[in-house]
View 1 (cartoon, rainbow, N blue to C red):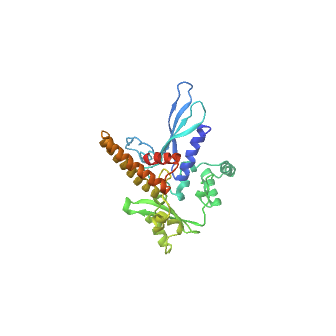
View 2: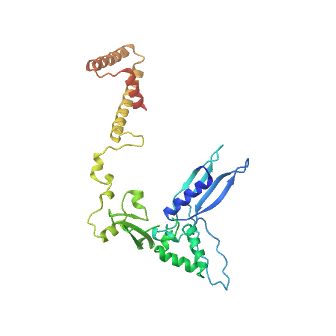
View 3: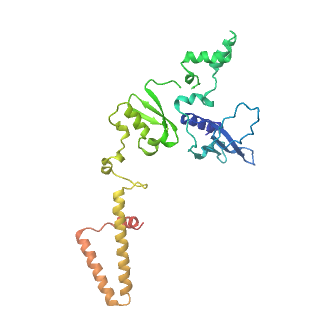
Length: 308
């Protein structure tokens, strides 16, 4: 990022799409020039708030907003430059994320635009208060979810289903069902992580009367056709070729061991060495007659590969 603020804005936009809010955490500065070297941006539910002592006349309890969430990024200043990079990133949260149909209630989505402020100011001249003006604007745009500067126009082709998972501590999940192609997205993100649709997606599709999964959810790796496709390891080598190469390397290693054993046993007996040389020379001539010998350069590369 060219500036620190760009990095902070990047994480705020990421949080808005993902369903959580952020806040700025601690800062470290360089002693030489006082520039910010490290900046921490955390989830707004990071840490735990100290429980205040309740007074006898207290009528309203302060809501619990801190849940010990570890989601954060660390922005680091690049040496000899004024640019920043994401030095560390922790993705996991300890709390449910905001569902799309309630994202407009978040603090970052409740900002008034210049048009909203002007609308409220104009209504104030007609003795209409700010609260009533805001509610009136809500009726004009179709709901509070359309009030944000960005809160989000509802799509008629997307149906949002809220489900309560009683088998997992009554967690609430949201499934977005796309009516055009019958695809679905669940807030649990199981399909994105493992490539397998969760049971909540399957339940929604079953309730919609679908007899089979859409083709997009049937990954090749879970079908019989996966065995017909080439498989590669992390080095980019075919798994099958790698297996054969390992077997060849094992044979070559065993062969060298046998050769060294024979040489060590015959090194004190010149007659045995001559006999061993004749055997090797005879096998060499046999290979030459078959045309199986490779060029020395290619053979050298092959030996390096086999012997690693």
